[in-house]
Amino acid sequence: MAFDYTSTFRPNMPAAPKPGGAGPAFNFVGGNMDPALIPVADLIAAFTSVIAREGPNLAFYNTGTGPLGYRPLREFVAKTLKKKAAMDISPDEVLIVSGSLQALDLINKLMLNAGDTVIIEEATYGGAMGRLDALGVSYEGVALDEGGICMTALEETLKRLKGDGVTPKYIYTIPTIQNPTGTIMPLDRRKRMLELADEYGVAIFEDDCYADLIWDEKRPPALYALDAADSRDGARRVLYCGSFSKSVAPAFRLGYIVADWAALGHMVPMKTDGGTSALSQMVMAEFCQTKFDSHVSASTASLKEKHDVMLEAVAAEFGTSAEVEPAEGGIFLWVKLPDAVDTSALFPAAGAEGVAINPGPEWTADGPANKNKMRLCFGSASKDEIRTGVAKLAEVCHREFGVPLRSGNVER
Image (spheres, rainbow, N blue to C red):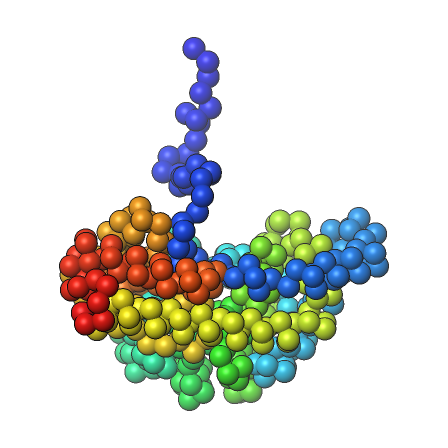
């Protein structure tokens, strides 16, 4: 009998479905962007220019510009964050990483051990929670409203944990275009969060990956910027990450961490991938020097149109059965349905009809309490796909749960 190497696999390994087959006809999941918005011609020009000029430097890991990443790209990040988010930083405070997921991994590796506790928003990025689960780290969800994480609830959580002898390692927040709710945290809350971080001795992990996609393009100061302005003794309270995945293209796999050397000095040796793709960094830097602002403006305007179409489609197809607030930017709508609906069960039923959704439990700290919620992405779908797909979703939901009461009618 031939030896079967699968017998040597570690137990409880994750498994993915085998590749192949067409994707869903109506894809409202993930963080994908509209293929029509990818600036293909400008990227071709950037590639041609940069490879002719700097191609020989591909002979060196990190193109010979050091382990933080390609310096022109770090310079662009520093300049842009100063202009848009009031972050007065040096390129040497920027570490280029392979997308925001690597940023999550590096910051978690820097700060967390099994058994630790962190604070998250009650609805948040599922990838962040999945990583905490894998590390054996506990998390406490804090209530959200139209201004993001509620400071009263945050203070109550910190006080309760302190009474239990627990000091959280960090507060994970998405203050600017929160994922999945699409809200923006007001300035007074940002300042209050920093005060609470000081009072309770807790760091803040600021995830700003959607901050470029604000409908009115008026971006508030980052927590990282306010940290520098408010810090009395020069000590940092905030670690920051951003990404080019939503502003330019997800497949580039380019993100960045902003932190002082006290943190970066440990993260650099933990980044054991040999360096984020130098070619991607060079092309991105070349493109961004002249095209970034105009591209982001055009993309945001297009996404706003699709946001409005999806908002209208949900209202038309679900009527008062669906509670949803307009997002202030980004690519998602967060939808609440009646308690009778279980979106974890709706997910396979809709998938069988070609409609992909994100069930609420996968994006919330208390999954069972949010079974009637779902996240819908309008980033990659066309306007016609949004209208048809939401109508199909309402039909499936009506068939499975009797919600909305009469599918296909205005009165529900």
